Image (cartoon, rainbow, N blue to C red):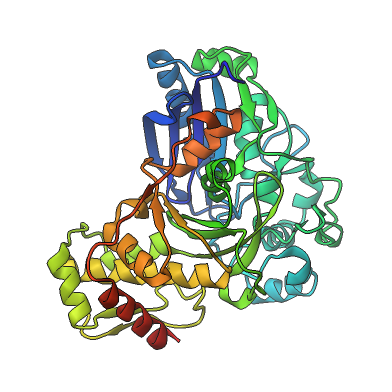
Length: 456
């Protein structure tokens, strides 16, 4: 593995699909190509545009190899997705969009068979966010699907399967609030028997296991060597966590930002997780349990900003604090630590496109993140990955609200670096930069405490 340098990372997020080329010697991204992750409405249910992604990925791999050389391929995807393959290795059904609503009657049936939170560390989530609920819905909706399904695999492994023909799951994806995994025992939960799928679940492997090498037709289509190794793959939030598992010591937390904001706390205080507040146990690339919490921060940002550019300065920030202008939870009330609460403005709602609105939503996201950190017993520094790491107003409020150091990644996307590191190269890791508090800490801390009281 040490001879490998250029790692092409397939990174399928809920909003965009990407191919990033990572240089393992410098841990930098040489090139990135993206396309929107469009959901097709059916039939038989809303599903991901896998064929569109596949054409995009093959073309991007060909371009990267022609321009830079590709030595290996890693894969990371969003969680809450599962893939059903038939005996020929093709899709037995389109890959369901986890945000598709599930009828109440089926929800009640599923609730009667799912294991308790104490076993799975997996809270009951909305729609199809529990993979077990997706499977139950799909089998009930398409009565022939269970018989057609020969293999059940994770979403990262679907792309690995198309590249190599191999079948597997990885521990981080099956451990991502699926209801199918018992993290403390590191084995499948009893739900696989209730759904009669134990013999269909592909073997669970470590994220850094080599899944296989390229099929001849893939090598021909991309120009890559048929010997190009493809790693098993990793859930995207765990990809953000992985570099820090390799480089940090003591207690720390990682905040992975994107459509979802995922808070993962390592070595913190022992806490009893509250499943009603969207806390859960994730499983990291080393197979260890990780107290976690989440909310749809990127989606909430899009809703409040409504397509307007982010333009704000310190004058806007001061005005927001002086006027005690606050966005209170929850913009996306079906998920996160304030489920069931409806968003509200304390003070007059600032106009769309204004700097005041941009600051208020940045502070809101920081306070939601602080709430998640508290719920997971976080201690030590907080490391922010992804798009929010470049929002200094978010970082400023998070630093004041937690009272602990905030570090921010300088990488365009932490998921690609983490996924590439599955092939090694941790010697090149550089520590994230510490964020210096800007503005008066007493004012920011007072705002944070006021927000907590009003948010309940």
